[in-house]
Image (cartoon, rainbow, N blue to C red; front, side, top):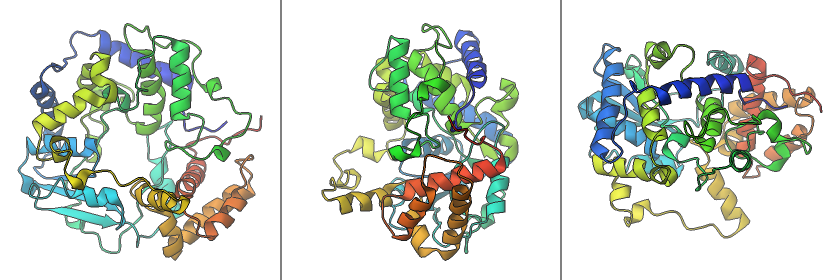
Amino acid sequence: MVAFLPSLSKAEEKAAFYRTILTDDGVDCFDPASPASARDLAVRIFRDRFEETGTEKLRLGVTSGMDSRGLLGVALEVLPPENIIAYTTGQKGNRDIERARYFTDHILPTHFLIETQGGTYDVDDWIKRFQARPEGTAGTLYGMKTQLTNPLKPYSSYPSMSGFLGDATSGKRLHGVWHDSWQDALAAFAKKNEVFRPSTKRLVQTMVPEDYDPFSVLPKAPLLPQEIMGYDDQLDMCYRQHQRIGINFIGDGGTAQHQSVRKGIITIYNDPRWQKSYLTMAPEERLGQAHYHRMLKENWPRIFDDLVHPEDPRYAPEPEPKTPEEKLERSARTALHTNWELLWTKNAQFNDFAHGLLSDLAERDVLYWLDVKGLIEEFDKNILGLGKMLWCLCSVELNLRSGNIPVPERS
């Protein structure tokens, strides 16, 4: 069985936590009818955690996505723009990087591009990184070990700010419908999130054995009564979110809330008050992130100019690709923040790093249903569209070496 999924006991532990916050009248919520109320709660959470850092400076990774820009809006409520050092990690040509600067222009004086193309990669370094993650979680390969020139080095003492709103909490990962049946929610979750694949990104069907049943790793009955938490939320928050975020509320809630602050990372959206606010909200306000987008647009219109002026051609989606070649090019240009195919072909050090990981994975026949050697041959042909596969397989091998996931067993 491929891991990258918490055990049922871990899901039940998380369900108990959500039962606690959702039934505790002492856990405050913002007023869903007031965008200012949501903003004020986020600012209170940030201010509480930021004061523990003992500094008035901040590093903030910014992309074109809603979450990172929302964090920027919150930070600007507390800090002056000159105290915020923004950066975007990736490679030139990635549209996400180009768009990120649309939203910080004329707002922040400092916004760096941290290029990954010329970085160096080291297996031992990545294994240490993966082992440092919270117990029971798996990691994915991002970025590089060192940059040839790192513009963030002078700001290394600044705390960084990160966080996920929680896709289920905001409605992003819900299925466009609220399921009243556990079986319907279960089927929709397995289909949409493809929980049996060793990655949080969708991959080709060859990544799983033909006889693998994703339902075997999911609970047979609800973890919580529906009146406490909807079925879709239970599956997403207790499984997919644990897989993706990992650090959410480990152990004692009071300690875990501030666990990342001690490591120089400030988080907001994993706060019980924020989660409870969304989980108790009317479903129609969450589906499609309706409330979230309205809150962002009304509180920080300059940062969310794309929501205020969706007709602006800068924010228009790219034309749909027509030929297979165009589709592959677009996939390579928009996948993640790093173009793994470009790294494979242009960075010899990364090629050696990845080739060694894949070769070892193939020789041990760990993913017994997958022809890893055949894939290496495809990579060497410079075929576009395989970047996610390359990224995923390298991450699987690094997690295996770090002991974060067990070796799959033959069925």
